[in-house]
Image 1 (tube, rainbow, N blue to C red):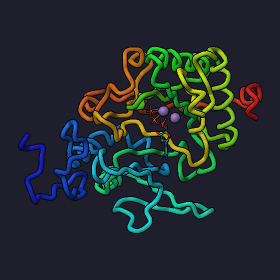
Image 2 (image 1 turned 90 degrees about the horizontal axis):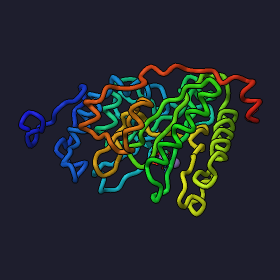
Image 3 (image 1 turned 180 degrees about the horizontal axis):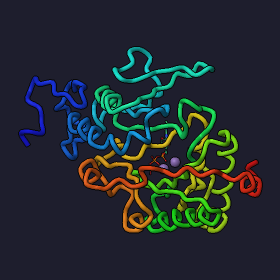
Image 4 (image 1 turned 90 degrees about the vertical axis):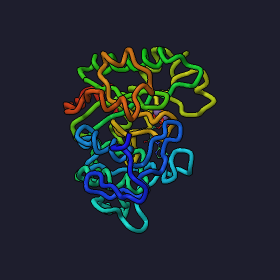
Amino acid sequence: GPDRGAEAGERPEVAGQVISHPNRTVFPGEGITKLEVARYYERVAEWMLPHVIDRPLALLRAPDGITGQTFFQKSFKNGVPAHVNQRALEDGTELIVIRDVEGLVSLVQHGTLEFHPWLGSVDRPDRPDQVIWDLDPHRSVPWEETLGTAFLLRDFLEKHGLHPVAKLSGGKGVHVILPIARTQPWAVVKSYARKVAAEVAAMNPRKLTTVSSLSKREGKIYLDWLRNGRGATCVAPWSLRAREGATVAAPVSWDDLADLGPADFDLRSALEFPGEWQALPSQTLPVSLLREMGAL
Ligand code: ATP
Ligand code: MN
Ligand code: MN
C-alpha cells in the first residue's frame, strides 16, 4: 500500500536506522522488499531480542535477496555496522553481538536475513544455556512422523523431570530446545545431547538415526545433536528464513505443534501469532542424570 512502501529516492528509517535500497526485492515470490524485512524485525524485536542479545551471532546475509548469493558470516572483516559490537575472545575468535532493536535492524540494513545465535552468551562463553535437538526428516518422511518424534523426545525429557520447548524451523523440520542453567561445559552438554538422541533413536531404529551421513538418513529422521558444540548455532526464534515463502522459525507451544507444519508461519502470519515461550525457565541438568546417561 502507499503508506507501506518507500517513494523512489527516499531513505526511510526503521528503529532509527536509515534503510538503503528500501524497495529492493528480497523475496521475489511474495514481492517482499528490504524495507518490509526491516519493519518485520522491528515488530518482532520485543519477542525475539531475549533470544539473540548478548549471544554470539552467525548471520545469513542475502544482500541481493534469496535468489542471489547468500553467505554465513560470523564476523565483519572491515566496518562493523552501527549498534553492533564485535569483540574478540581470548583465543582471538571475533564475535558479533547486538544489544537492542537498533542492532537488529542495523544488521538487516547490512543484508542480514537469518539470525543464528550460539547456545550460550558472551559473558560465559564456556557454559551453554540450552540443549538443542534439530530434527531433520529425509524428504520421503511424512510430517506426522517428525511430529511424533518431537513428542517422543519431549516425553523422554519429561520423564527425567525436564521441560523442553519446540520451534518450527521454517524449513523442513522442528527444533526441540531445553533451556538449562549454566552449570556444565560444552563437552558435557554435547555428550548429554548425543546420549539422549541415541536413546530416543533406539526406540524406533527403523525410522530414527543419529548418524549425519546422508546415505544413512534415507527414509529416516536424523536427530541432529551436533548443534550443541561451542561455536555451533541454531536459527533464532522469529528469524526469517532465506527460503521461498518468507517463512519464519516459529516458537510454538506443544499443544499448537500437533496441528502445524514446519513452514506454516511467514513474515505476515508470524506477526499475528502470540509469542510462545518468551521467558524460558532454565533447568539444572542434575549431575545424577548426567552420570546415569553416561555424559559425565
Ligand atoms: P531445516 O528444518 O530445513 O533443517 P534448519 O534451520 O534446522 O532447517 P539445518 O541445516 O538442519 O537447518 O541446520 C541447523 C542449524 O545449523 C541452522 O539453523 C544453522 O544455525 C546451523 N547451520 C547449518 N548449516 C550451517 C552453515 N553452513 N554454516 C553455519 N551454520 C550452519
Ligand atoms: Mn534442521
Ligand atoms: Mn540439521
